[in-house]
Image (tube, rainbow, N blue to C red; front, side):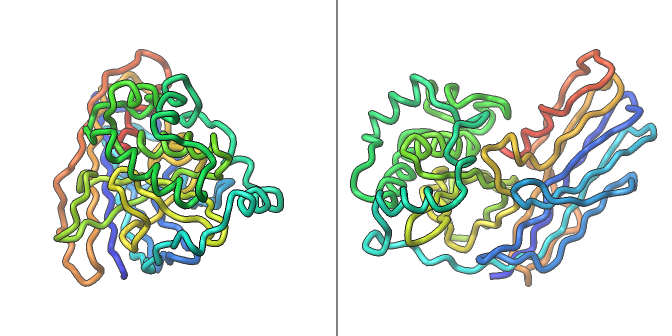
Length: 317
């Protein structure tokens, strides 16, 4: 299936800020199951944009807007071909011994260790006992159980957590958003020594798909290493696997590695962020203007340089 993805991010500042430095992770990846056929990035006002790849091979665009401005509009347009990923079968999946041998022979240590948002805690250990999260059956069967258990146990409630919320907030309230559910599953899987990584991207919503995640926003899920099958996508927000509707943008240890936008600006300004995302089949028309699905306002922090941590909430909401 070929999808067209349009992602529009707009920052407004009042009064004007003097300079903005920003990095973007908006270009979909190309790998064995997905190919980014076309990608175009437009930033207004127009800066000099540099491109590089980070330690996970994600494409990063970076710019420095060194002039006074009250607005930055970032528009990315991609054409992505995604293969239908066959569902792994338990009979073909390897054992725990196979997984341990795979880990011993390959370099997956970063996806086994605790990370900024996927750390163990007393609440996580309690949840692990509730889910009977132990090395039983096969790694694939346990991952399928976790995927379903998180979906059934936690309510999807937009704005119930913040972009920098640790998983204990979602664990305590039993509610959250896709970012929280991905972090919880990653932390539980890593405790079983299953390499697990965070994926940011988009989800195509068909007419008959009953997804909990909101339309018009980016999405997050996980990939876990399954012996005999490789890296398999699990979406605990919607209790599904990667089934040809998930469009991968960036991989990381957790959200801290892959926010869509991250940067700083100079000036004590009130700011407003609006985000609009549209994923359609490539042959469907895309409107010239899209209504924002997310609007976030923040007050000046009264420091010489303000960070945009609140702006990154577009990923999880």
